[in-house]
Amino acid sequence: MPAGAGGGRRRVLILGGTTEARRLAAVLAEDPALRVTSSLAGRVAEPRLPAGDVRIGGFGGPAGLADWLRAERVDALVDATHPFAEVMSHNAALAAAGTGVPLLALRRPGWAPVEGDRWHPVGSLADAAAALPALGLRVFLTTGRQGLAAFAHLDGLHFLARSVDAPGPPLPAHCEVLLDRGPFTLDGERAVLREHRIDVLVTKDSGGAATAAKLTAARELGLPVVIVRRPAPPAGVRVAEDVAEAARWAAGTAPGG
Ligand code: NAP
Image 1 (cartoon, rainbow, N blue to C red):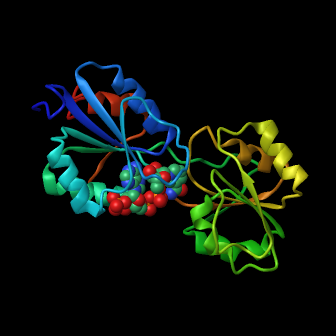
Image 2: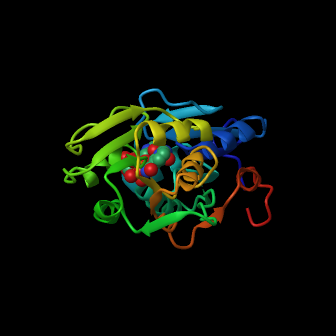
Image 3: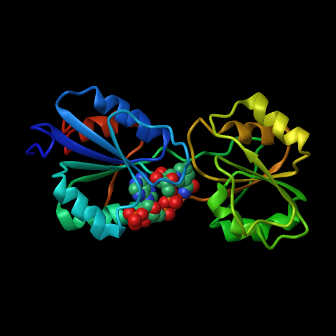
């Protein structure tokens, strides 16, 4: 694989916005043979910045991303976005196919229920909203500020919505906002559920350790959890589940990388 426009170094673009993307950038930035750039959508006002170069903001769809890959002579593209960042992952697959730049999706595994869990898997935020009235009255919503509109019509329920930045309308009529950013501890999650007298939790199946404590806390209290299943990655895209594997692939040292 020829080195790109990185001063003779192999050029890697990471589509980021996750803990794993930051970890990957930290590993790759240590390698003098690589020049790594992380891309963030710009959704969070004060993002945690990864090591290496950072660019912020959309590319302008798959064509804009393809232009960027060509202009920067990118050798390897890693889609390390959140498992629910479906549009960006789809755009990455299209841009990679159009430019011939090799693509790897880094996806942490989803969560799995254990004994004592009362999970209600659903296919979308709309389905989560439809399931709620039968499950509880005081809802802890941890699906992020962008998804709150799906619950805005549920006037009879009380919501505690946790997000990094303040959400905008439309919001449910009875909605308290808790501004916070993970990782979250088990003690902290127990306290949130108790103090707000939560009787049902809503989450996406994001996976990972940073936000898993709420599931343990809900299990301990016997609370139902509405869990939104994650979308499948785009067809035909190679997937790595851990940062070390993605780092080997991005550095060009993995078999088939
Ligand atoms: P999305 O719906 O899949 O993407 C919408 C648009 O945002 C994309 O078309 C792209 O704009 C831009 N975009 C998304 N990720 C980008 C990136 N890493 N770099 C540059 N542009 C990006 O994305 P989303 O669900 O809103 O997520 C946005 C970001 O937040 C992602 O980076 C993701 O990793 C992170 N995040 C998402 C969630 C979640 O639950 N969805 C949770 C935690 C973190 P253009 O078409 O103009 O290129």
